Length: 282
Image 1: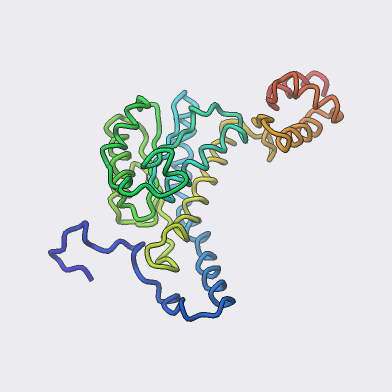
Image 2 (image 1 turned 180 degrees about the horizontal axis):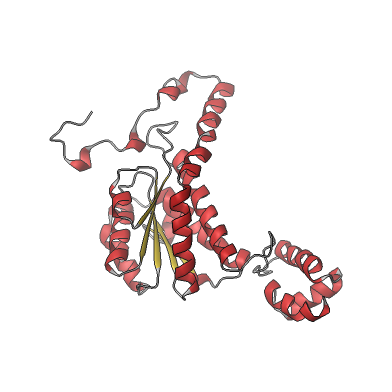
C-alpha cells in the first residue's frame, strides 16, 4: 500500500491490482483457465450498467454537439485508442454520417492501430497538437478513453478540450483517477482487477467497447439515423450492405427487391435518399 508521502504518480492504479480469483492462473487446466476468464468478463456488463446515468448525460451532450454541426472526437492510447478508432470508423457505413463528423486520434498515429508505438501514450503534448490541427472548438466534443484514467495522452486531450470550450467526456475504469476528475462527464465502469494484473485489453477494453457502442448507437438513433431498429442512414458501400439496404427499402417502402435495388442505385447507395424517392409510392 502506498504511503502517505508517496508521489501520486507512484501510487498503484486500480487497474494494476492483482486479482485474487486468478492468482493460480498458470497452474490451471485449460478448461478452468477459460472458465475463469469468462467468469471475470461476465461482470463487465453490470459495471457498465452502473454507469448508465453518465452514459445518458454523455449521449445528450454528443447529440447536441453533432446536431449543431460540431464533431465527436475519440482520443486514446493503445487498446483504448484502437477501440475509439474502431467505433468511429463504423459510423459512416452504418449510419451515413460524414467521416469528419466522428473522428479518432490514437497516440502514435496510424502505426499504433496495428502495433505498439513505444512511449506514445506518454506524449501529452502531441494530443494538444493533434487537436489543434483539427481546429477543435466550442462546438465539438472530445471523448477521452483510458482504463487506468492516468494515460498522459488521454488526460492532456481532455484538458485541452476544456481549454478550447469543447465538451469533455471521459471513459475510464478508475473512479478517482485524474481523467475522471478532469472530465465534464465521467463514464466510469468499475470492472475490478484484471485476469492478468494490468492487462486492460481484457475487462477494461470490453467495458470501453460496450460504452462506446452504446453511446454511438444511442446518439445516431437520436439524430434520426434509424427508423425503428432499421439503419436507414446506411450507405451501401459493399455487397452485404447493399443487400441489407434492399431489404430495408422493401420493408419500409413496400416495394419489391428489384424496385428497391434500382432506387438504391439511383441514390448512390444512400438508403435515406432512396426512401425519400420511394415515399410517394408507399
